[in-house]
Image 1 (tube, rainbow, N blue to C red):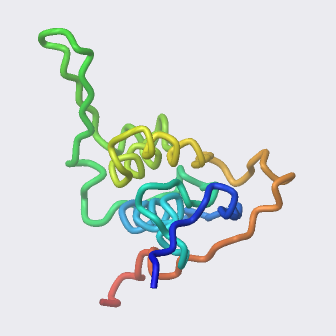
Image 2: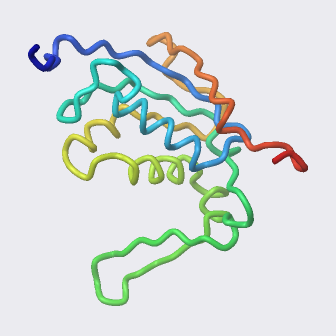
Length: 153
């Protein structure tokens, strides 16, 4: 039996909308990266962009476990000597929450042009609205990514 290799014309892309309100950042982003990569499809091929489009709304309401929001730092470098800048995730969530989600997903995708192409199918919005209603996105519920209420383990 020969190995099935999908053709670019065989790729069927679906639009998903995910409400990030109360979701844990890492658990949300692993599922988003899985959808962008196309690993949820039976025709997945690692050398092709098989993934769907993903819209994340309410990115400002994403949570981090423990006290990571205050203690964990996000780094960026200007490229010049002494150009390393750091900022806590609490500050980033207050100023640019969509960038926090986008960078977390970017770290979970392949580090090549294929990963950049997959990241282009991610749309992140800080608020509850998005301008992509013409694409008829399907709501996707990720119950396991929600933070458990206090006292439940």
